[in-house]
Length: 218
Image (cartoon, rainbow, N blue to C red):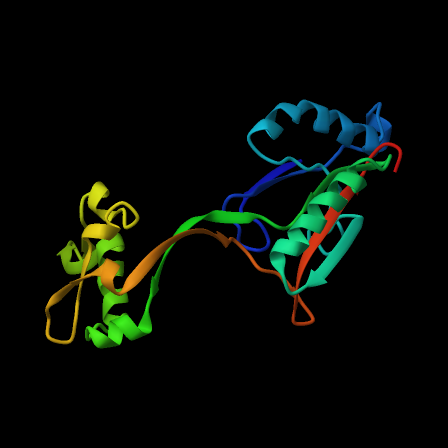
């Protein structure tokens, strides 16, 4: 039996799973461990563009691996550094395969950081300015078109080049309390950074989990 699913138990759309039920042991020439090793070797090429794991289905179908090691702390940057080092060490242990962490660095982000004193002196509300910037990058739902009882939302957006706030930061204007347009660079600064795609917590502390499956020698 073969069953496929798009998405994970934690609602991650970029993951998928394939459930394979083996035939009765008397009807096959290899045991479960050998079958997993064969599948892992066949899927090795896919690891170039993604992560592939081959394991057993636990009773609760929670996706837990036989090895689960949690690192807890307050600073995710420090935790990720230690987790990467431990991942390498665990990968060298005979019998452990598919060793990985649940930490994923987020995509690059561009933050606009307002200077409260400058904003107040020029009459710029950070809430109003934030709304203006959101409309500039995401657009705005200007109307709704209805046809045959179905509503279609109409979103008005700038062209692609004008929506890049990082490139257009120097020429971007935001309104103040008198509806005068103030250069964004006079009340804020831009910062290129990376946001975390997911933050896991255990007992109110942040944690990174290192997990692994059992191989032929496990």
